Length: 146
Image (tube, rainbow, N blue to C red; front, side, top):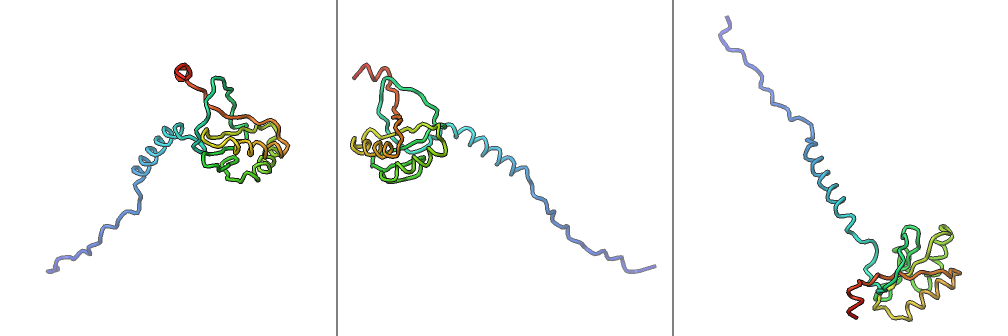
């Protein structure tokens, strides 16, 4: 017989090359739920304090070309910043691609009246005569107290 015991080679346990996807799926689902819950609360566009009126008509903004004037006098056409001189051409090119679109002007209440008129004049100089003004409907309680 063999007086020496048999020697076994020790082999290291190899690490498995698998990625545990359970945690990844959990995090992804939580992020998806958070985005679904928060997305309706996110306002699109620039922060503009609109003038209040007692009568207003609700238009679908997906079908409109939106021109925004913030309180510092900056002008944006469809969220792209332009100068007052460029407004007419920018709106005209968008109107060519979407002839049924309505042009809406959103101006801050603190903006000088002359700036709003300059923007409207630039739009009308481009041949667009139908321009809507975006306003905010006044609360009935606020209207009674004034």
